[in-house]
Length: 399
Image (cartoon, rainbow, N blue to C red):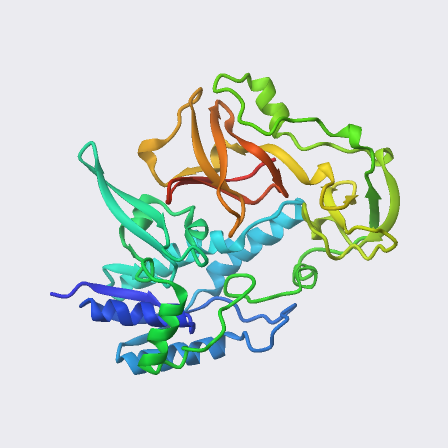
C-alpha cells in the first residue's frame, strides 16, 4: 500500500515541483493549501492575496491529477505567529516570523490537518535535506542544508523537533532552483514563472511600521547620536579559551548600555519599538557624510540610539546569550550540559555566511562567543548552530 503524503501547496513553483517529485517517487500525494492571512494592511504588493495563491495551487493540483483541499489556519497563525511578532516588537526585540511559522504552523497545526486526511508524511518545498542515523540504537533524524547554497532554507527550520522531523519530507533538498524552474516549465505548470514570495511568511512584503501599527501605538521620541568611541570595549578577533570565566562571558555577550547624555539629539522618531539593531532606513535625518545606523533602542525611555557609518563600533558584538528556556536542540543526543562547551558554526540570520563560534553552556543558559565580531546582533533573532551542513540546534537571542 502506498504511503500517503500531504504536501503544502502554496501556489509557488517550489511546492508544485515537490508535489510532482513525490508522485514520481510512488507516493499517494494530496495537496493542501493553507489560508493563513487575509488582512492587506501594510502590504506593498497588491498581488499577494491568498485567493491568488490558492487559485495557482488548485491549478497545479489539477495538472498533476492529485486531490486538493484547503484549510483555514488563520486563527492559529494570528495567535501563534503574528501576535507573538507584535509582542516581541513591543518589547524592542526583533522576531523572525518565518522560523515561528514553520515550528508552530507548517509542522504543527498543518501537520494535524494532514493527519486528519490520513497523511503518513508532511511535505514542503523547502530547500533542505533530511536523513537518519542510529545513536545508541536510537533513530535520530538529521536536518541538513539544501544542495543549493543560494536557496538553502535550513535556518528557517532550526526550531523543528525530532517528532516533527520524523514525518517531514523535503523533495527539493538535492535540487537547485534553476532545475526546479526547468521541470515546472517542462510540465506546463501554471507556477513555472511565478515570482517567489517575499516578506513575512504567508503575509507578504509589508511596510513594517504600517503593519505593526495595527497593534503598536506611535509615540514621538528622540534619536540620539553616539559619537564617543570610548564607550565601546576593545575586543580581540579570536576565540576565547575553553575555560573562560563566567564574568568574562557576560562581559563579551552584553550589549553596550547608553545613557541619554552619552550623545546628542539629532531628530525624532515615531516609536522605538519600530526600529531594530543595524537598521539604516527610516531615520529621516540628513546632513551626514555616511549613513546612520541604529545601534541600540530603549523602548521604556522611547529612545533610538544611532551611529554614523558602516564602521561604527556600536554595530558589532563579540557574543550573545540565550536563556535556558529558549535553547533548542534538534540533536538531543548532542545537548551540552552546564559547564560544557563546543565549537560550532553559527548564523544569526538567513543567508548570513556561517561564522566560527564557541558555545558555552552555563547554569542560566547558553553563551555564544564568535571568533570575529558580528554585525547587527539583536534580541529576538534566532541563532542556529551547525556541524558541517547539519543544523544541531538553535535559540532565541536574549541579549
